[in-house]
Image (tube, rainbow, N blue to C red; front, side, top):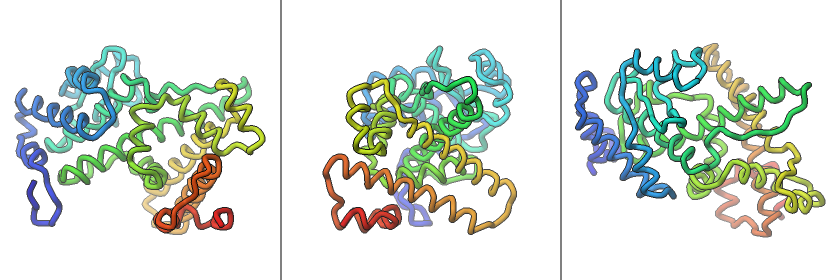
Amino acid sequence: MNNDETGVVKSDYARNIELFDIKNLTPENIEYMVQVVREYFRAKFPVQPELVDDVLRHMNIVSDEEFRRAFVESGKNVNDVETRYGFYDKKNNVGYINKDKHRTSGEIFVTIFHESLHAVSISAGAGFRGDFVSSFGADETERKEAMERGLVAFIEGTTHYITLNCVIGDMGFDGTDNMLRYKAERTVMSQIWDAFPAEALYKAYFVTPIEGIRRHFDMTVAPEESRKELAEDSSRTNGQFVDFLIHIGAATGQINELLESGREDEGAFMKIHNDIMHAVGYFLVYERQMTGKPFTDEEKETLGEYLKPYLGKLS
């Protein structure tokens, strides 16, 4: 490990990869990047090594033309292909990275890392695989679509939140605009996940099926008198997790509108920020009440912004 002129600790991995020529990437360069991801995943995340090896055996760096063809053949919506840097085809267990969308080898590494997170979570059957389904009536089309938008924001925002924390924050890669994608989604999800230990995030991402996440959320924020019914019947839902996803989608949309408009509306950003923080605080307070584990003084200080509206409940 070495320090660059900004004082940021830069790993040897980052130094080596950033020297690769983006216009002339060799098979050895690509294999090196994949091997770095393998080693990092094994050391950092609660994943089976053989699962990581299997997923990263099929990570392809391709031209824009090849990427578009693979995207269409995978059955994905062709209208989404314009903005895609990479995608994971879970049907064939192949990751595709569009090399023509990237300007540096560091940017390609970020995309490999991001798509590998998707691939490992999907292969492990964990929560961030995008297969969450909730029953809706025929007259609830708008609500279903809103939930699905929220689920996409939840998954992509969390995936890129982990990616940038690891690649830029831990390994020390130089950040570029192309790396800082999913800004609205990350803004929302960072405010949520910053309230939890990394172990809780990684357990949700790599280990817990999404129905497990849904049940835990529904149980936590349910009135005490209805928790027993929810606990006894795993198929029951009070719709709280669906509402949570809908709110995530709405907050992401509002932030996107502000970003795209170019307006510096600090009041609007702060309202969205406070809404998210207070919602997370509500969950934290009721989770602790449900488990009977009180907040420590240190936790109250660390989570003060989340807990402020609910301090009366903690006394």
